[in-house]
Length: 250
Image (cartoon, rainbow, N blue to C red; front, side, top):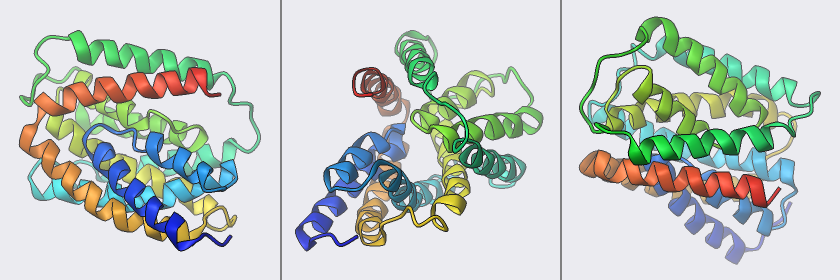
């Protein structure tokens, strides 16, 4: 599929904005997917192209959080493997099931996340006592949310952040960093099907990926600098906007 240079430049700018927002609070797909659809890409191709370009920004954000000391790659090794497997299986299953029920269930869950992050006390960058054992249950969470990401996708970052905060007691900045690592892996798992199927427009993906490199880095640095003061309200805003989009623009 051929795209004009002006369209590619515009998509690059969209990629930078999407990467910035996604690195802090998730929800970059809210910006990227509509832009790809507006450029004339069919829905499935837009979804595959979005996964491809978002890998770059998510990877940059994950690397930046890791360099800042907010992520332990050793602790996430097994969760990453199971997240990849879950996303791959989800992408396989989605071709043979009806996912329409998710268009109602997911917005309800996102609204609950927004309410929790808006009103829950003591949400900060300070770690708290975990309710579940990290080595045992983070792999299970990764598999489940990776599976969801392969089937449907919207809200994956919000669900991961919520899990890391509520179940495993991580401060918000650490939760954001761990979320980026597992989100990166889930995107790669889905791409193992999208790329061979030809569901990626490479010119658009590359243009947006260049923007994602810049946006992902700046977003992660901004999240690290301002911490919970910024991450908390942006998670609330992203969750509400995504819920409304799923409910109204189906």
